Image (tube, rainbow over all chains, first blue to last red; front, side, top):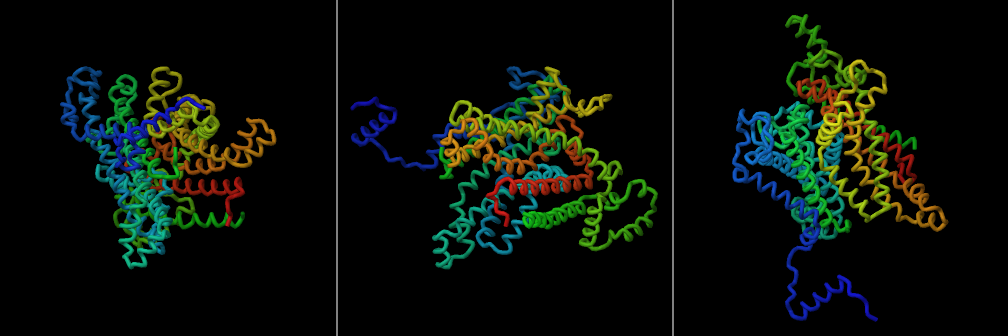
Length: 306
Length: 319
């Protein structure tokens, strides 16, 4: 009985042919990376994130304009060949501001996520493995932090510490460590019962070596996913705060600070190029990071198939 | 059940103590004399410096930190929240005046997002893998990636400034004060806030519904000859809704946080607006007290949600 060849059959045939000719190479790359590469949305997201990071790092080569230079003869000019995205209220080039603004916005997002990870992961890994008194203390402390609505805690800390770029990163770190701590702790609680840990303990290795060198690498997958998604969350929060005028000081261009002028209804209605490009940039960048995060989750979590 | 209730309630006490301690620490650390928010400003203006000193002693401001904290806590329990730095009005009055507006906005958003999220999520689960399901999933992803205030701004430009269907902001036009006059003003902020939350509810309903549709009791119902729509919506959705109720509980902090920015975009005169203006004006006591009240609200709401799930789901252990 013959049947029509399906796509899968053709694929097998070609693999068989290659094996017979001896041209088939063993796949040497990482399985997780391959899986990530086959997720189209994640690859697209990663490409966009890389593009944005590169263009903001090499901003002076991407645009000839200074994001801070005021040109009063060029106020609120619509997009043209000179200024691709037009100029803002005091004649600054909007495209240059978005490219340079990316530096600060991405720095705030990534810096805070890494800061939160450093605190959350190290506390979570150590106390999660050790258990006991310190574990319950930190668990309570994180509960206190996490019961605040995030933006209220952030704004409260802005009031106490004052408004600056460094303070904002510190504040985001302080408000964001809780979820990473919880995650790491939960991972440690399940991993510490594994047999290899008992073996290491029997060998007399120090607690520190066991939990940071031997257990933590096994918990890195979900932690990486969480760091990625936290970066997106902090970029959104920076935008929200700067929109209110309470985030990064207004003289530094960031994606949120560019949007700050949209509180003026006249600008909102008549001069779309001043605020819309930045709004689109933030949304696309965060969407791209979320795609990457979801892709990472699918590759690192064996229970999430499909 | 009663024991569970008491136990959960007792659990709130250490949390609230910890939070109130942090808030008091913040109050002490922020610049400004404590006395200025313990007394109405006009009372301070009439005092001589030495009287002020005597007053500090009498009020116990020179006492050890812990004692001051306990006294402050005692005041809170009796409803004494201190005075706003900017206007000298008691904070409790300022906040109470704003609560109806915020409640109106958040309840509207909650109802909107729950209805739409559950409907779209169930459709998505029933038509799993279809074009509709995939596009709803992508829309959900886009929904969580766009900041709420950008949604708000775009809605403002389209519906208020260009189409002029809805008012630009505020809760009431001067001269109109019946309850129904709020409605045109409420539509946009509530829809924007609701849309953001719909994405989350939708994703969650979808996975919860898929989970319950694979259960044995669904097969039993089908084999008994129950009509398909009844199987899906009466047997399936009912069980699927339990985790969704929990999710909506978890969304409450987000809802309270979300109103902060949305109220600014639409100049909605709620607690969030009061809060942001207090932060802008460095009105420390007001900032601290609103933070404290919002955490307390979140804690009590999650307590109620816990009780609700315990009542809804017989599988929840009550020990």
